[in-house]
Amino acid sequence: MGDKEIPKKQAANGSKNKKKKKRGGSKKRMTSEQTSAYNYVSEWVFLDRPHSPNTDDFAIPWNQPKEKLVFELHSHSIHSDGFLSPSKLVERAHQNGVKVLSLTDHDTLSGIPEALEAASRFGIKIIPGVEISTMFTQGRDSASDEPVHILGYYSSCGPAKFDQVDKFLSSIRDGRFLRAENMILKLNKLKLPLKWEQVAKIAGKGVAPGRLHVARAMVEAGHVENLRQAFSRYLYDGGPAYTTGSEPLSEEAVQFICETGGVAVLAHPWALKDPIAVVRRLKEFGLHGIEAYRSDGKLAAYSDLADSYGLLKLGGSDFHGRGGKQESEVGSVSLPMLAVHEFLKVARPIWGRAISEILENYIKYPSETNFQLIMSFGKPKVCKGISPASCPGDFMGQCLSLWLTNEETQNAEFEAIKLKLAAISTNQ
Image (cartoon, rainbow, N blue to C red):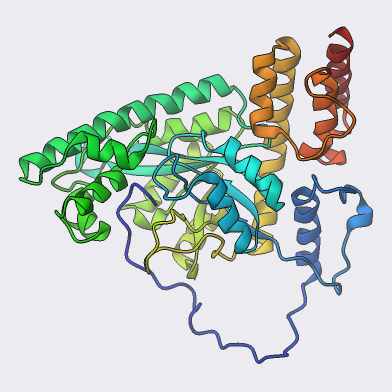
């Protein structure tokens, strides 16, 4: 959750009542549906491996051992309110068996390049992500307004219309600076003196400060004993030191994610006052899914809510690296393979269209800046035989097979893109 107050634990669907399996007991075999889902997901996860399983030959029979695929779809780094650098986060995820990690820092994509660089060393696939701070309002009744966080998941090449995304997120971050200053003013009026320099130092150079940074400054100043106390007494939604920033409306953020080639998912709905009203409204603007899984299992109420509105059921640890009993470990959410399969069935066509738009824009404006922007998100581990500097078009044409499956690129649209990219390299 990061910038939100940590909610009370809710019981998952009998997750703690399951009996432990006896040692040496046989593992439960996958059904044919689960095996089909696993093969679909594996094909995408391992695209960048040598001799990538990019054909039907990769289909794994139901009775053969399968590599465990752990997806972590909600995590934070020091580029927002996390405690670890992106590279350290990736290393931690690798140690915990994560195969696919989405770094979803608050209102910024700035940590993605470092995460990708580290991921190439550990064999982890990165989904470029972001957690956008928004405000949900129900008409004129401002008392019902509440902060809502929307997760956006993008393609291997990042978002389409990157300049627009950068401007959109920058505006929110600018509001976070003003918001933090106002929180400090309120705390000072409450006889809890804090200085802006303290909060800025904790946040780090260039990082837009959030409530967690203010809370950490309060702990360091001795005003509260711990982060939970800072939130429960002063920084909770509507609390004595709470203030809003310049967050966009939730509907605008969902629509914006959809327009820029992303998958929009409602984060931690259990923290909302009226999750049904939020989901009902955001579904109209293109919301794709909600978080329904946590480290303590599937939350039945939110799974049912997702089913009621035809939404994907996802989840992640919301890992920040702060430590303590209250934090879920990165990779600790057990997302069912069928849930991941449904996610990718929705996401991959969206991402494919985004990659097409990104490459068409490069073909139209084949500048070094545009090339480097694409590579900052989509530079693969291996593209042998071609120099990115001398033949950028050919290089990206070869990279297509590492961003998309053969099936996704074997159509008239991508065949035309490959020819145009080759022509760029020839001209250069």
